[in-house]
Image 1 (cartoon, each protein chain N blue to C red):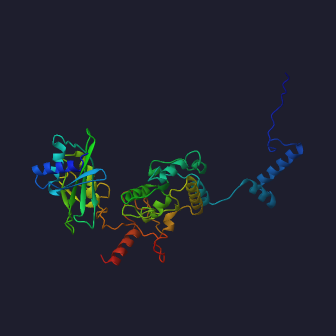
Image 2: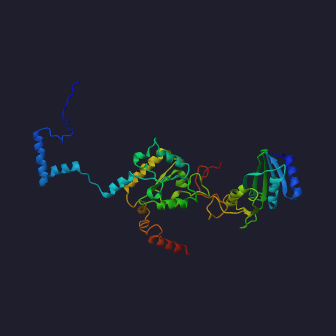
Length: 174
Length: 236
């Protein structure tokens, strides 16, 4: 795993080739992350996958998160793994929310990592993040006629309210 | 070794009269019966000894309650408890329901064993509609009864929102004994209100598949009237 100086080296090398592609790096809790420009996410991933000496050829996970009060709001995380050196690096693309009914968009990385097909569908299903050039972008877990993006933080939890002892009327605040 | 040979005698005194006098009494009583001239009290005693009366509904309910065919159908973790109900420790076969059918067309009891997601609900409803009349449903556990701990966007908050349920069993999950108790309650229910079952209770008689003309059928007239009334109410 690249440490903090190693991450800075990777950042400068990518930015030499693709100016402005890596915005920042972060290293903490033993995890290395590159914060990438969502418009150049494919260039960053391709460089990490194909550059001799890097060769992070395995996408072990692709997921998203909603950091609602923060801006930009969404983060799409790519967890890359080099299986020879057993080194991991995370690429995070911070996506702003266009607002209204417009969905945030990012390039699909299925052409680089075919295993990203289902994870990208899942991210689309739960967060409403559109992956451009995805071969088959449909909902994968929720029903296809479902309305809304249920894992967004401003999506109501749903269900029915249940009166527990901590929220029954007149209960002391604890 | 000495072998004693004797004629086998039947144990019942009916087979072998003990004395010539008793044989004579029996012969005379049979002759009276053939003539139709047996006395009132004697006739009552004779009939009570030999005949039991009941109604057809009662005996139908008795037969149905003691030969329920559950469907092989598990939804979630409650299915583990449901599976163990047919095993040796709590033997569902004692109550005549050991034949779990793999087809809804052959089953008359569906046990909703687990949470029902909104994606699964139409499929469960379809399976329930495919079951033959009369049919019953047990909602097993907190999740299928009320949504349980899954108070969220993906789980139906109680299976009785989309299908009729006869017995709700609490627990998370209920122990096999609890499921067995619930099944006994259902048996009592089948004995008590046999024929139309939930259709009578839900005021839905005439909506059966056969009454509507087969599988590819249209809604009943009552349902159409209800839809029309709803449309008028909504102003659509």
